[in-house]
Image (tube, rainbow, N blue to C red):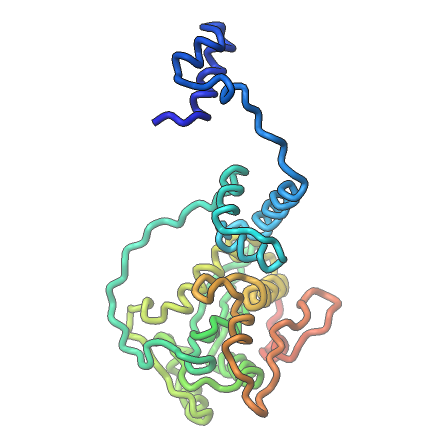
Amino acid sequence: MVSPGHKRRIAAFVIEGGLCSGRAACRYLGLARATYRYRARPPTAQRSRLVERIHALSAQHPRFGFRRIAALLRREGWQVSRKQIQRLRRAEGLRVPPPRKRQVRRGVSTGLPTRATHRGQVWTWDFIADVTVHGGALRMLTVLDEHTKEVHVLRPERRIGSADVIALVQAAIARHGAPEFIRSDNGPEFIAKELQRWLAEQNIKTIYITPASPWENGFVEAFHSRFRDECLNREQLWTLSEARVVIEDFRIDYNTERPHSSLGYDSPQRFAAKNTLPIPGSPPDRQTGPSLRLGLPTTPERTTSTNVSD
């Protein structure tokens, strides 16, 4: 079925080409002459501001679709719906390329508990690797809470051993309290005897996934996919110091601002504040600490690991 807009374009084409008159073109196409002559009203000032803000947010977050953009706009006070933002983004040509289809994993998780029910019950950790522009290795430890999706540790180093893992996790425990369980793969850093002794001293139970079954550690794998798509693939990291600044800024933004679909489009920190009661005597959570930009002070969380020169 041909839409009225398509008929208008066909009529304009044949009329401009001198093939027939406007009256005849409308008669042949079954198009009302009033519809052909209709000209849309110019957008209002409010709609122009909305479109301008949509462009700004889409440029700032090029991998966000209309749902997350709508969530950010509502957080700023705009009275908009997801369908409205979808129409405006489509009209403005703003589109996120869909990811490639992946083969569905069909493994069965052996970890218990299989799903965290409250904050601090299950943490998960893993490594992700990248390189600087000149080819220097970047190895990053990720530690996140499976219930709130808060990223407690995201630290790049040239290399990370079991002693570095202990130092980074110990700093996270000092800020957020110790988890009941911690889930990981069977990497050498996670099964080291030194780390095993330290976890036993902290009364933290371990959950190891089945070898060659990364889908059993799906929360951290999903975060790594977002992290690579929204940060590592967008940034040129020249040195280790620059990588620490950019990645820490991403971690703070992820925890405090980024809408998360499984959390009702709240950020992890907002979700935690709504669904978690404070534990008496626990240290305050200072996720919104200052940036690592030069000239600004650093928080204790960002100075716990051994400094590695570029």
